[in-house]
Image 1 (spheres, one colour):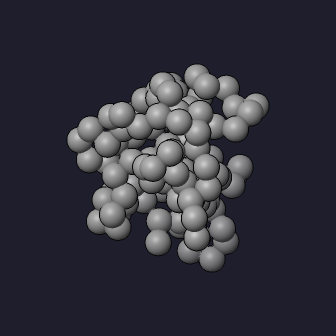
Image 2 (tube, one colour; image 1 turned 90 degrees about the vertical axis):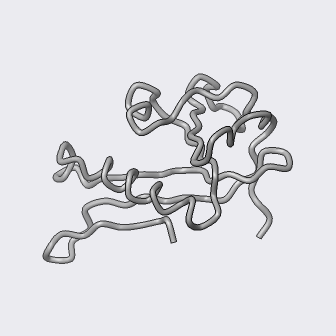
Length: 119
């Protein structure tokens, strides 16, 4: 329900965002990525729109934390912060692991390896 696509008035794909359920030890989280915007539509704010709109829906669907691997200067404006103690598989740079709490304190005490959530 959170993975979305954006199409222009002619139905041409302009952007997309995808979420995946993951686990960090006994805790669940959403992994955001990929997010993609067609090169001809970049710089219009479409990526930010997809991020904000999809994250606004997540708490209503029972999610309280989101993580991603990305550039902190870009994702900080959406509320993402560096996570310590959360490990993605190599060769992920630990400084690029970012998280966002959708409810207060959602990342407190969450540490460990990120794994695929059971289906």
